[in-house]
Length: 343
Image 1 (tube, rainbow, N blue to C red):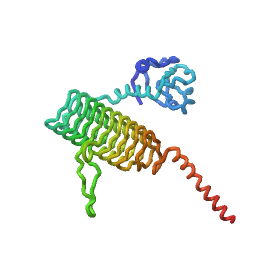
Image 2: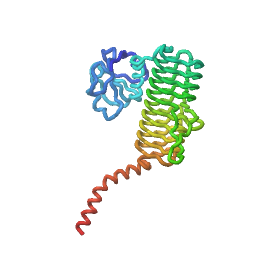
Image 3: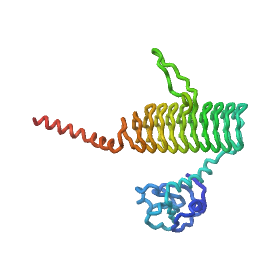
Image 4: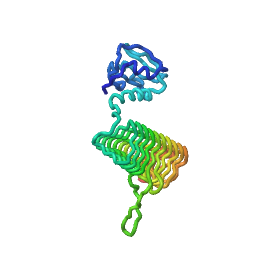
């Protein structure tokens, strides 16, 4: 990674940090791991298991936890902070503005804005994007190339809509939302009635509401409700390739990892955490603060604060014990076979 940040710019981000050592390097050339950093690089210790690599690291600046014990090498600075990973994220935020600067406000000549759409000031709309009639786009929002904003859609302020996003009709996106490439908001719900030997489509007439400061990963799809709304609560973060069915309600501050599938009319209360590839049957309730391990299958309601694992899901500690016992089964069967042979 090639960067252009001075040492002073970085140090100014952390006025309360403890600084030890000195260096003649004035500009950081890159960010590297502890075992591969060069003299003009910045490195950090975010995971204690890499602590042994710090002493031999060549970086001119190393971000460390406050309890790290050790002295910097010659021409090296130690920057001790409460949370090195978070501090590195702040540095990366500065770099992101250099590497991927926001486009200037304005509508690209190849974009098409239908009559009746309301575009606020300071909005940037990229090439080949489409904004339909009566859509509203709030100030300082960025819409990338090849995006679709449907009729009567509302997009709030300071949103970032990456290239290739589809927001279908009548959905609402509140302030500060980030939609990564390929996201589809408001696709038809998967609902059919069996009539004889055929499946007849059930119209889905509702919408999707994405509350403020939600981030949604690439190629995630969120279906519109059959009636009323599918809703994603404020501050929730959703990874790539997640499927959220019609009439689902996700609470505030939830974390949903990649390839999770959530069937229709499921409700998550606030602060639920779901590992990758977990699946949820329809019409369930997952209580506040519950944790669901990756690849779990959830077929019943989940109590608040529960930690479940497995398919079907069990309390985490019980699932771990069963897993240990399963590994011992071949030995147990062999012992039974040997006992039977002796008889």
